[in-house]
Length: 314
Ligand code: FAD
Ligand code: NAP
Image 1 (cartoon, rainbow, N blue to C red):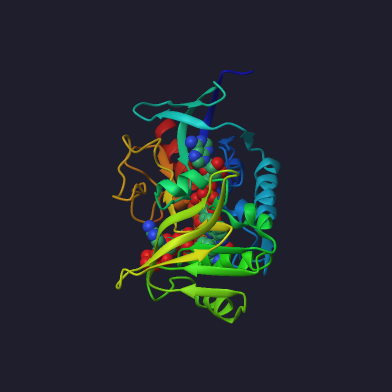
Image 2 (cartoon, helix red, strand yellow):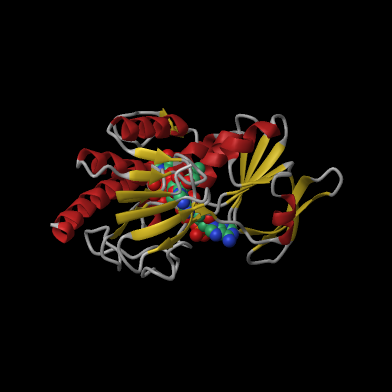
């Protein structure tokens, strides 16, 4: 196996931001190399219907990402199945180490590492991960056919997961810490109309309850935020859908970041605090975090990388 590969543009990440950057950089004849990471296709591969990707009234998330990958390959992007474990941005050419042992050097870097699911941080959550606790209804919903499940969260992901789970479960309880959801109105409407769902407002989750042998979830103990009263919600599956955090560990010490870890980029730009390093998508987006906005930023990053290389390399 090749141990060192140089490219003009190294793209880290294979979500909508990474693949869009790849399409634009390839068409600019920059011959980019894209490292996919451990989730080829990114977050949309763990969802079902995407209904807000322009041009497709409805498209399955995984299918959309296969199409983006095909597009990037067709225009000449070199796509590598590897995960970057460290990156050095202090001097050009930039260099990165892959989990495979390969070293990647590049004249410009586009970071598009997206975001990862947040967890509640309870010891019982850790104990039952993979044994009834999940952050992906699309991946694990099927196991709960004919059973009761609970979801925690109040955003688009939580409501979509709850709705998806009604395809399998007999009952889906949504537990939310406030008395209002932040999910889109259309999703809220579908949730309220679904006879299989119940919403428990103003509750936090204290503990996930279950058996040790065989390991499995049997319920969650929740607490009312004002009265402090606790209740047990029986369920065989518990889905955590409380948002995502930017995957910026690789660069937190090298690039300017916001308090939540989102990489800071210039106004109307994907330029980071290091010239030649660009960041796109959920990694840098505290506000919108959508497939289409990520793709838009991927486009910007490739165009800005092209301009940077033209100006710096003559
Ligand atoms: P991501 O999609 O997060 O991709 C990040 C990529 O970086 C991955 O390929 C990963 O493998 C790679 N990576 C990470 N670290 C490394 C590393 N160290 N080395 C190499 N590669 C690395 N948005 C919508 O617009 N419509 C929807 O219907 C919708 N539904 C959603 C449903 C769910 C369940 C979730 C979780 C999100 C949904 N979103 C939706 C949001 C949307 O998925 C994200 O906004 C979008 O995927 C972000 O794209 P991205 O390219 O920035 O990053
Ligand atoms: P989000 O919008 O950040 O919502 C997170 C939810 O979890 C909030 O309701 C929050 O409560 C709750 N929460 C956070 N921490 C918690 C904790 N410790 N305990 C209990 N509850 C907690 O995250 P998301 O739903 O994953 O969405 C992320 C982004 O992807 C959003 O921009 C979203 O629009 C996008 N997305 C879009 C679609 C779509 O367009 N169809 C689908 C999925 C995701 P509070 O409300 O009280 O803060």
